[in-house]
Figure 1 (cartoon, one colour):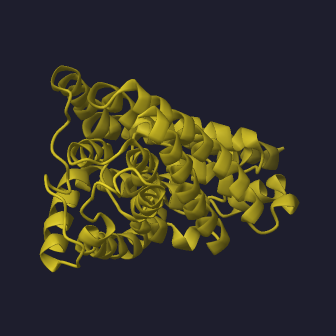
Figure 2: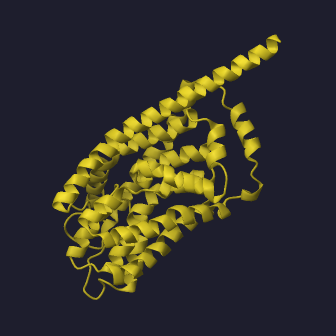
Length: 352
């Protein structure tokens, strides 16, 4: 009888702790997103509605020469991190906290399966975050450490609707429609199919994974969180800074000066699809980039390719999650972004 009472007390204590931890995670998330994303983006949406602009292109107002420039590297790295440092810190914080605050059993039941339901739930859950893939990468890493499925974690990582409202005001509803259509295919379709490239997806035993996770959940919150955030900072921060620096150095090579014969050609669409997939930008930066490029004569086709490729993934974001996914998955995602961006560009020739 005494042993039974101890078991009941322990179960109630664990349940109470789980509820407190979950509420704490939600509170930190809401406060962080309000400060970093929701309030600033509300003001930016009002600015876009009145001025039809959300600022200057982060690449500058001129076309770059096709060469490597270390001056461009320093300039772009500074401008980029000036725009994203708050979101980057929030992403690392949430990526570490998701490992120690959210109940592993619940995460596995909802997001641990390889079916479309888990992918869909994760994709929808990503919508309020409005984060670029670099800032969302630590959260995706944290989800994978909790054994969330490849498809679900990818859908959370890739999903980013923040640009749609700005896009409608600054560019046009045609850009918004094109981005929405191909964004849905990428976030839900490609993420779900990526499960097929993960090992042993058909033999996953959720119940055993939950039991193992619960057995490993012992230990103090502070020690587990310190280990989690320490590992993230040691790996993510240096990789992040160095890869952005390299992208800044080669930006002139990735986005060369546009000639009249090249401005709306298939080769330009393919080139910008590849360049856009590799390059890294802050959230919504593709809008002033496209706006500036089109003012210099860029056609609707390459603009349509950039529309999807720039915000979807980047070489830095792929490097940040490289240890959390099989290489086949990352190559599949990168290839899918390029292919869908090319298709978006072809549609853009006739629509934009």
